[in-house]
Length: 391
Length: 243
Image (tube, rainbow over all chains, first blue to last red; front, side, top):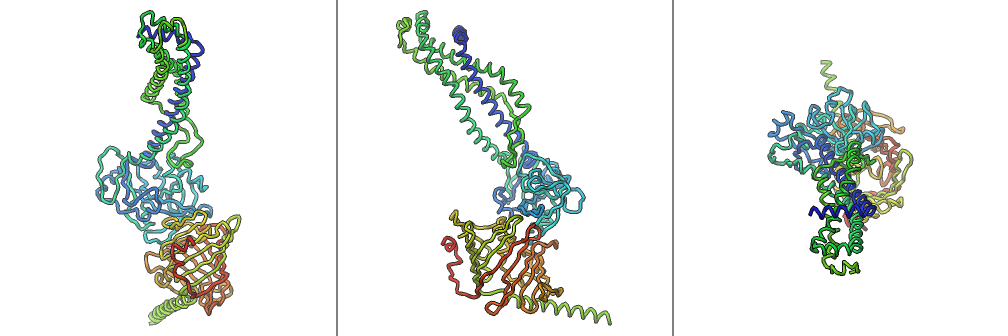
C-alpha cells in the first residue's frame, strides 16, 4: 500500500502540468462548495438568531384562531390571557402581544398596517419597547426602519391611525414615533406599529386580552392550554429551515455541475493514462503485481488528485474563506425585499462537519471516477500490454 | 321657582328636538329609501396627479341587496360587484374569477376612490342604530338646513357619531360628516344638485371625501335613477356575476 501511494504520487507529479490543471479545477470545486454551503449555514444561523431575538423568543402560544398568513383571522384571534401563565408573565419570562388591523395616514396617504401591543417593560425581545414609556402629546409608538422608510416617517413625527374596536366601531387617534429600530426580521417591521399593550387593549376594548404569548425559555416543558396553540421554537423556525433547504437544493445543482466538470477531467486523464501506459501496466504484472493491485494503483493515483486538490484548495481557500467569514457578503437585498429574516451582510459559517464532509464527498467521487476506467486493466493481456499493443 | 321653570323649559325643548329629529329622519328616509332602484352613474376619482372616471350601472333592493356593473373605462369594463346582506363578491372578467371581499380587504378603497368596500356594506337604517338630535340650524348651498347629531345607541356600529345637514323644505341631506369614537372627523359627504324624481327629492351629485387622506375626494354623479322597478331575482345571485 505504501509503495502504491509512493508510486501514485511519483506518477502524478511526473505528469506535470496535466496533474496540476486537474488539481486546480478540483480545488475550485472544493472551495466553492464550502464557501456556498457556508453562506447557507451562516444565513440559517443568523436568521434563527434574529428571529429568536426579535420575534419568537423561545417559542409562543398562539390564540387558536390566529394565523399569521391570513389577516382575515385577526378579527377573532384574541382571548383573555390564560390565568395559568400569570406567574410567567409576572416574572417577565412571558409577554402577551395583541394584534389588530388598522390604517395609517402618513402625509395624507393611506396604508393598511398591523397594530401590535406589547408591554414596554419586556426584556425577552430586542424591540426597544422602553421607548413606549416616553411621555409625548399622543400615543407613543415604535416602528421598524423599513416601515419608516416606506412611509417617510422619522422619530418625533405625529401621524394619524384609524382602527375598528371589538364592536367594529371606527376610532382614530394621533400617534408619535418615539423610536425607529433596525432589524433583519421583516415580520416585526414591515407595515407594523408597536404600541403600549395597555393603550392598544383600551383602544380595541379588549382589556386583558392577547393574540399570542412569547416565552423566553426554549427548553422548559410547556403544557397545552385550551384555545391556545403551543408553537415550539422548532415549529416557529420550520419555515426558515425549509426555505434554506430549498435554497440548498438549488445551490447543489450549481456545484454538482462544477464538480462534474472537474471529475470529467480526471476521468479523461485516467483513460489517457491507461491507454498510454500499457507497457508500464504489463511490467507491473510481470514483476508480480496482481491485476487487482494494478487497478488499485491507478485508482489511488486518480484519487490522489482529490488529496492534492484539498491541499492546494487549503493553501488559497483557508485565507480566502477566513477573509470572507470576517467581511461577509452583501447580497444587495434587504429583508424587506425578501419577506423573511435576511441580514444586509451575511457572514458564512464553516463547520468541521461541512469541511470534512465536503472533502470526503470529493475524495469518494474522485476515487469512483478514477476506478471506473481502471477496471479495463483487469481485462488486459499482460504479454500484449508489455509489447505496448493496443487493446 | 324661576330656576325650575327654566329647567322644565330646557327639558321640554330637548324632548321636542328629539321627536323632531326622529320625524325629520323619517321624512328623509321616505325621500332617500325605496323598495328598489336602478341607477346609472359616473364616479370621478380625483387622485393626487390624475383623475379617473368610471361609469357604472347598479341595481339595488332596499339596503340589503345590490348588484353593480362597471361599464367603462375599458380596463374595468365587465367588472361586477354583488352585495347580499353582509357579504360582498367581485367578479373580474380579465381573470374570469369571482372573489369574496372579507376581513381587511373590506377596508380597501373601491377602485382607488374615497369609499371603502365596508362603506358600501352598511345596510341598517340610521334610526335603528343612532339617537338623533337637532343641534343647530345652518345654511348649506343657500338652503336652510337642520343640523342633526346622531350618536350610536348600539355598540356594533361603524361610526360612533354622525352629523347630517337636512334641507328644511325637501328633507334631503345636503352634507354628512362621519366621526370616530374619539371625535375625529373621518369622512365627509356633500350632496348637491337635488332634483325631484318620481315625486321625491334626490341628490344627483355626491362628493365623498376621506378626511384623513389628501386629495379632492370622489365625485359620484347620477345620470339616471329609477325607483321601484321590476328587478329580476336572478340579478342578485353569484351566477349573474359571470353573465
